[in-house]
Image (cartoon, rainbow, N blue to C red; front, side, top):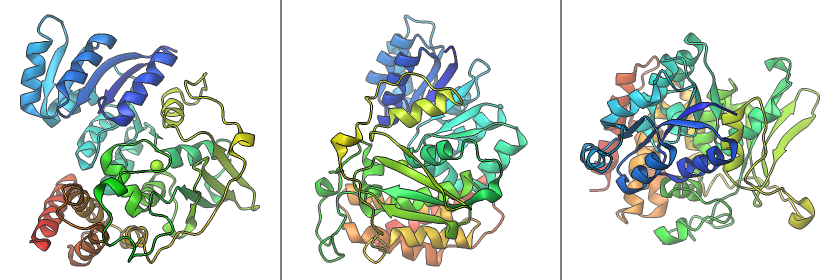
Amino acid sequence: MKRNISILGSTGSIGKQALDVVDKCGFNVVALTANSNVELLEKQARKYNVKYVACNDERSAEELKIKLSDTDIKVLSGIDGICECASLEEADIVLNSVVGMVGLKPTISALKSKKDVALANKETLVAGGQLVMKTAKENNVSLLPVDSEHSAIFQSLQGCASHSQIKKLILTASGGPFFGKSKKDLENVTVEDALNHPNWSMGAKITIDSATMMNKGLELIEASWLFDMKSDDIDILVHRQSIVHSLVEYQDNSIIAQLGLPDMRIPIQYALTYPDRFESPVKSLDLSEIGTLTFEKPDYETFICIDLCKKAIKNGGISPACVNAANETANRLFRERKIKFNQIGEIVSEALINAPDIKEYSLEDVYEINNWADNFVRERIK
Ligand code: MG
């Protein structure tokens, strides 16, 4: 399949797995971007003989320019450089696997340039859902979910004749490394404990979000935007084996689900080849080997972040962006060992209560609330 693809965040976990899929499916890579991992970006740029690369970090871009000076590869820098890679004439589809709110501008740029976007950057939809969905609609382009749960829902919705036939979405959650623990048990857990995810191999930020279950809350907001569903019609189900990736219940109580081994290359590939399907680098799921699949309710009292996200999306407007931003800072502070695990949810909750309430927002408002929440969290821990 010859498709021209631009990958934003190619040195991260999703980006690297996407390049695995590229190798298998034979796409043509036109651009690659990273924050500051010059060494790997140089290797990737040479291997895929891309036209453009960009580093978000200006100094890294300078370094890369020198390293690639024997090639015709154009080296861009900063958020503008990343946005340029997101809107190239040559690209048919953009994979956005940037981590965090910083992915929002490139998503908007890609959509405005009429590119389909394979979206692995959930913060884009959490922080700017209203803007992103509007921009996609205005430009008549698609957002293809890469997040495994949303890919599962998207796949389970193929063949659905009308939105009114959907009764509810059911997002599965692994429960993370701390499932079954009480709030008290979690008082003194370490960064290492939290980074020890039972099923998925992911980047550090999202692995901590899985431990707090903030990830599932953010995914609920993401699903609500992607599939135009009210938060009350999205359930969360703990499924420790991470084999059933999510489900759709229809009006007749039939439930359709997507299953597979917990490997991100499956949803990445589906987003890039949709509506077609090709052979995968991932091995087949053998259910007889798995044996047992279990399903349980989440513990909302211990993992308060899920309800926080529900509250934010119900309140609407800028509230989800505030939760996202406060969480980005709190998550980082925990990884830097400056706050305790349980404080993540507590501080984000306080940020949400104190945040300004803006219903119709602009991109500038999103950046403003981002700074506000970041300051709020940092002040709060002093
Ligand atoms: Mg997910």
